[in-house]
Image 1 (cartoon, rainbow, N blue to C red):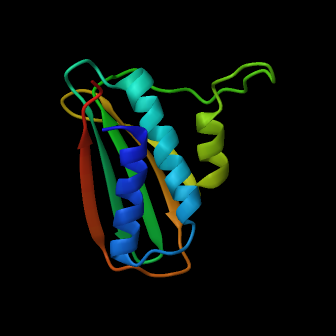
Image 2: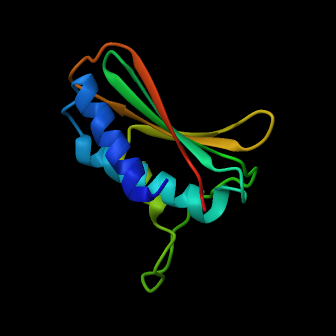
Length: 130
């Protein structure tokens, strides 16, 4: 799965669920979390999973990968060309965090409060880092 495919999955899923608020914020966070999983989290041959969960008044995105290495929020120098992904997640989402994934790996998630109230849904898409 590519970053574009993850974004497209998010767009299609939100459309199917009737979510119209904060679509671009959610798409950008999916892009950032997926980019991190591809660059730092997916162990060769293990891939990653993107999950979306909706409940009344909220939407949660999760990226599951096979690495136990946790990302750290950084404040990069103005001249650095990377390291701003989690800062963007912090600004665009209402909450985010990291959970252990068993038997190995981690889940990096972010939550978005919505004015609309989609019914409860869950969907996932798998990705192969190759």
